[in-house]
Length: 560
Image (tube, rainbow, N blue to C red; front, side):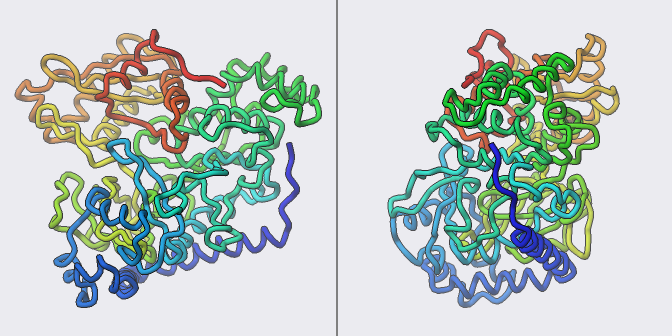
């Protein structure tokens, strides 16, 4: 199923916007302190007359220190009563302008947050980093814009009938919003969002996410894909597995010209024969075989994904480049990669006011914070941001690692969640475990498809579920376990003390099938969670989650 070529004028205007926003952000890096002052002044002046602004004395605040003294640090729960009043129809609560939509994102309890999205937020905070994020891909892989069907965008998921708040505003994922219609940004459509499969040609239930994924993949195998956009790397990792899982159905439908069993396209027996021949030559079939001119992946590269992306990239082709998606949450941006660095994102100094707290510091309303210029290279920090969209001194619970500085501003990478696993005083964060696993794998020359862990045993100890890329011998399992334990002792003082006094047992490694994490991902999507929200889980204390991953007798993944 093909789409008409994008007009040359549209591509030119899009490139100009993308490169223009990047140039403005690059220039702002040398003026980070000044832009932070401007951002604070703007959000205070714009929202001084709101109920929140009056309560916390925005009109009297002049400096960052004033702001710190006046406004406590909040998580979502702290702002939720204010947001719910807005969603019920009250105006001028957190923001001077009214939300147009509410982004949805899963909180730590599993409940769906409502993130207010106002016009001022979109034009001041969101769009500058959003456009700039595509610059490295557009600059170095210009063929991704040559034709809509050149990009398979796994996150694009338009929703014809979104849920709504009590006052009638759409409540949906950021990847489901038409920014052109909602905010008057005709250039804001992401690469791949005009592909022939962006709007599916057959009816499918809005919550049947696996069937929608199948239908897009079935259509995409007839296209010349150059780029896969996932944002969430777990969705990218699922794609090779899906090709194998759905291959017989794909071949049959390509041959017959059906889509979801409906006659939609001309039969294509030639392409079906090509695909069948590939499967006879390559076992298993991989994206690199189906799309030999695929050149770039776009997704997050930090956290657990840093362990498996190097090998995953090989399944998409020799020389395929992985460009990092922004360090951002639905609530707002933190960093965006402006060049081809595999991980480092420059602070978006124009978008929000940023404060930071050491990663191991408990976040209290009056937690001491640091400015961007006070961060140390190799340090890890929790991010606290404030922006004109109504989130004030807001903590998402994410931790960033400072890689270096560029143009006077820190460059950061996502390091994991701040929540610590703490059975015996060890206080392990995700970044501790990812670094230790990376060290152990580097020292043994082994690789993984994914990994999770939990605390188990009478004397508690960490049990790791590891999906290796190739078979490991018992001796290799022992070597990885020993090096993992040593690396954790070195990197996490609490873990070292707990192990030294016998409060934590030696870690244990449990090998699981290569497809275990993909089967788990499919099961979670089949249960109704949108693919964009089914992310890697390093710590798994829930027995159901753990057993679904490690027990081969648990029900298999859902399939279309």
